[in-house]
Image 1 (cartoon, rainbow, N blue to C red):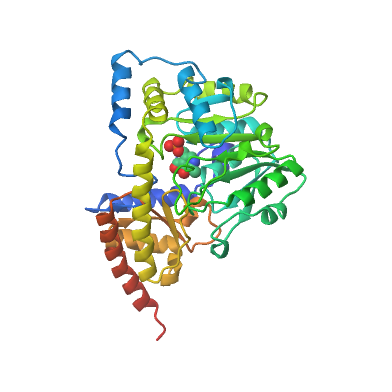
Image 2: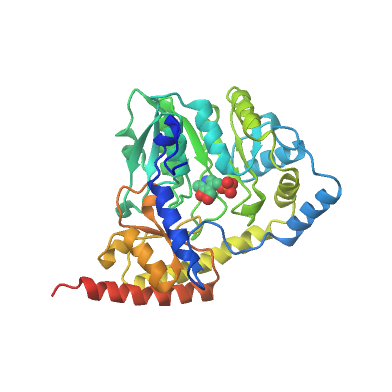
Length: 396
Ligand code: PLP
């Protein structure tokens, strides 16, 4: 079997991102002491009380399928949590717990998109949404954003891309890979465009509790006219350091949910019982762990941004999430080449923006997934490569 796949749908999925990551992973395998700032999987451990709840659930026999939509107590806790953070009211039947928010993206795309429908998405943006669009044979409409606006989607920009086939808008706020938080009043204007053009919206709010410098990620479904057209997607992976437990969810209006719940059931039957019990403990237990996690990323972000600035590498201002999006092409080589060089020569793994559907090969995403001393070490190692590249590309 080749890596290009055999089916019509498999061929449609863009594989260039897969090639980049496979090449980087293969390269890393032969190297010692690689500082991994690639994947969005932080070094932080799940808080102890959550781990304990998982252990207790297992000991008490949580080893079976659960209700297909998710354990009712967990769905009630999710509903309460959404409201507590300024979101819309949902009944437990309007929430589906999935094996990670990642799977929810594909359920939603399969349930809502027909071939030829247009899916609008800010670019660069988290790439699985692009793949979901391609699998359903929807047309991806990239709404290109740039560093001049800190990669912020605006209502005006969105309006320029609307056509009679526009069906679904994906908003990822805060953004992966750019760390942008769209200001609340701009989110409101974007939602007015969605109402005017009868768009459905997937609002990916998985990083909503990880924002900095007072930035706030406005929950979309709480805005006028939005609840009936919005699917809110989130999960516990990021705010509670629970990436490996694989628990996410989506919530939406009652008329859309039964079909989506059916697709979820076909994919997963239900989400892991132990993961759901741990997620319940996360959402209903003490919340100071979220602030600890947020302030950890805040400190790391400042260290990384300062280091990049000292190296003369421009970057977006990370207002949320845990990534810094840096214009590494400033060093004289395309970002894909820069990332390979940094991995080979400095043993630091970062990912080129092309993996996130960037329309340029200028940027790299650097994840804040290691401690401050490791980030300092990564910066020192990268500085050597940057110096060498600048010397190689200096005009004679
Ligand atoms: N949404 C965004 C924007 C992400 O970056 C990720 C993971 O990196 C997810 C959703 C999915 O996370 P999970 O499947 O761990 O819930």
